[in-house]
Image (tube, rainbow, N blue to C red; front, side, top):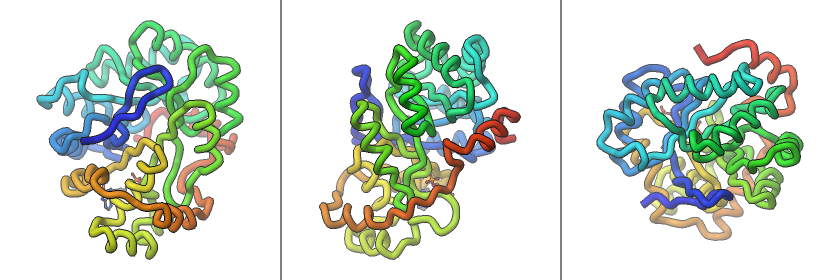
Length: 284
Ligand code: A2P
């Protein structure tokens, strides 16, 4: 079974979820979710920006798993800031999903104006419309801003994390604040990612599992939440099978040594990128 981790508000989150970033059509989205639910996943991670919330909602509503048994996350895009605007965008997300509540809602990036958005999310949380609120791509300075000015502590920070970009400082900081580290692009995305790394592949051979399973297992043992994306059934299933083997201290250290401080995505401190990202509203 897929373990759950306790959040700082007493709720729980399945440690493994299915990510659907860059899944751009109805059939891929619905198939991936159907396979994931059949394989035992009970956690789906989407975002307004991905443009697939409608299909995520359809897939869940058409499945025989109950809505309340699935943990669904979406995210507020950077172009939406302000109290009323955030509430309206949240309602739009709910409408697209066809839900009357959301399990988790995150501020997608720390683009300017996020404190006003956070206040709206706090009120939606207090009203029970969102079960858990958190952030994504916030660095320590931006998180400290939320902690100082907010009244609800974020439950997670969803940040780029993979063997070539391990985020050890951020991990320690989040742990000290009781905020869970959620990893996006856990396999490293892009080209030259850790899936083809020789160290990872040696470990995979030794454990008779795949490189992806070694990487996901490493995340899980670091107490991270992982949301690997795949639109292939065998991979969706394989990515779930990471709870029946373990990496020992030396093996964890061998992966720790791969850290290259190399991002594939934008830096949360890149103000020019954040500003630019506020001029469009979705990938399409
Ligand atoms: P695909 O959807 O074609 O399977 P990340 O979530 O780290 O960004 O990585 C996602 C990428 O890794 C996607 O391109 C996905 O492609 C691929 N992927 C997902 N699971 C596996 C796996 N078990 N083995 C190899 N590649 C995988």
